[in-house]
Length: 92
Image (cartoon, rainbow, N blue to C red; front, top):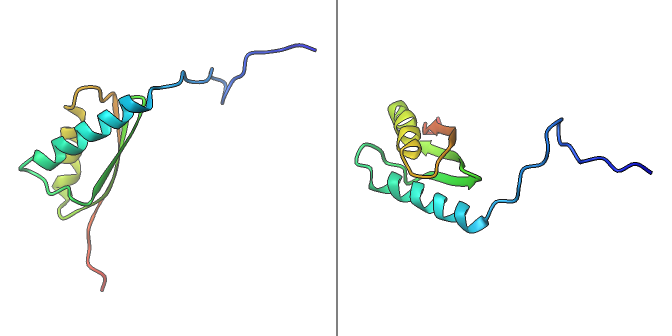
């Protein structure tokens, strides 16, 4: 029997990341968004895995989507952003 290194989609598996680091990064980004006067990010959720931050939720204006991403990128420890924020529209 031959044992080979495991590959996932042709790449070696990522190293385990410390969940406390991710939790702290989520908290830091959420705090930065909450303290920003430019945006109302009360409905934005922040998740982090290994320095990659995902923003999801809704904001009132289109400009706030970009601003939330910029604020998150300025936070120490953030390597990349996935921005899944949408503009809130009332149901008709």
